[in-house]
Length: 204
Ligand SMILES: [Fe+2]
Image 1 (tube, rainbow, N blue to C red):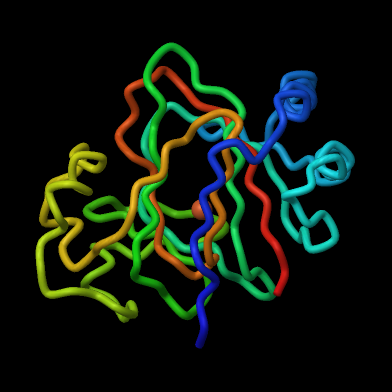
Image 2 (cartoon, rainbow, N blue to C red):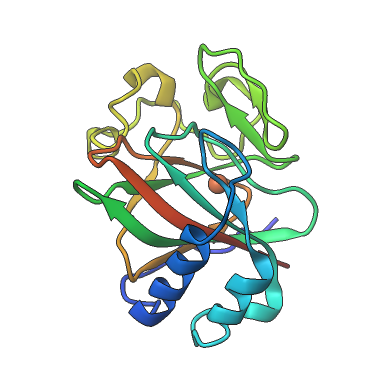
């Protein structure tokens, strides 16, 4: 299986579009979930993204906003026809930019979330209790995560990230981060109050 390469474009989205996308999010009357403040907004967001030469609007299959204040567990997002994820940072509140860590390791099946020691349930990306290394993931190493990468992930014990390697991309307004939906990814520890992003997924 051939994975789509990671693409980081540090200035790929215009500030006009970012303002319009934030307007869509903040003018919503309610949000889908309490802790993530998710909002589905495919049609409206697609209209804004039509103006962006780096975004292939015709391939969009999923599109939602999310705002959160806590780091998110490592997970994958493939379900049926998703091929790539695109993360578009919209806002970072009161603090330093966080990072999105994309691991080199990937999981072939339906999207999953590794919850380490916690017993949790999710509607999508069903939980697997434990760390990614303990499951049937592809490309795992037999080593601790590097110190360079652990710097971004030190909100969890180092052993939880055993067997993983990868790259941290800055969640910076104006940039976008594109990667294969089967790749394991996680948010860095947060040094800000909250962040707002738009996630889109392309079909193959
Ligand atoms: Fe994700």
